[in-house]
Image 1 (cartoon, helix red, strand yellow):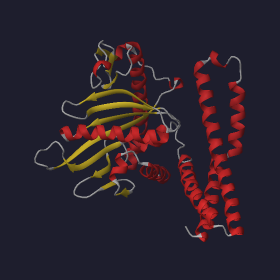
Image 2 (spheres, one colour):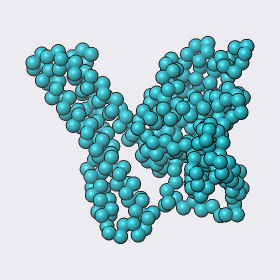
Image 3 (tube, helix red, strand yellow):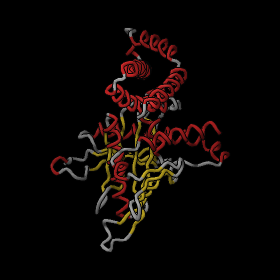
Image 4 (cartoon, one colour):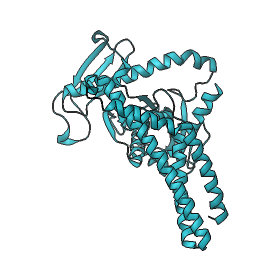
Length: 370
């Protein structure tokens, strides 16, 4: 990178970071952190577990935002000093170091800028993701499993813990469905833009004639519920079935009927969990997943009339939102944002940050326009 470009880029980053600090209102965040710290230090805090969970969760989020934005400010200030030193001493090694630091800082500030766009009611929550194979037979089941790997690899890259609650394996290859939790702050706000139908075009590895196959898989993303959400489910509205866990694992697969499937009779929503050895634990996890799906359904019903008036269903459940083409050419394209890349192998290995960032910005523009 040329020396004038470094100075110009620094000026741009300064402007972006100042905007982030203004949007987040850092002084207000510090005041809010002090208030939450005072609440968290109350000796009877845990007498009300729902309130204690709310306080400690909000405190962790606020402190995290403060640390991140203050860290970015320090890094930018240090980089300015390094550039001034390189300029005064005409030191090429310092210029090279500044260029490397600039690239890293630009990415970090860009991520924080996108974070400021996550201001929805549930955006700060953890996420529950369900992937289902759709049209395309065995190729669709294989595609669903490829998507499961894509998202778990994405979470690994970001250090986000993932817990798989249930996997239903297809007979020949791949999976019929899988449900997993992403246990990180803002996982829902970040990954909710991935909701929709994902389309894969490739030469089928399951077709002995080597024909091209189009297959589909659906991704559903809902926020994890909290105790304060108050989603009550009467016992007479659910049917609980227990069964033996199945799938790969040899002797590690349970040999008792510990897996649990819960059907919500009024809506027909079915959830299941088989990741724990205890039937009670699996039931509790499945109920939490069901509550999350009912909360999401409630939100969608509340928005239905507005969405209909807008005449815009883009990004909603069941709509095709991204196309992955592996033959006759290589391309992944988001059909909402028009963002695309030819590096399909990287995308399938979980490098979808640019798609997610563009999706969040696109969603914000849609919200502003409406």
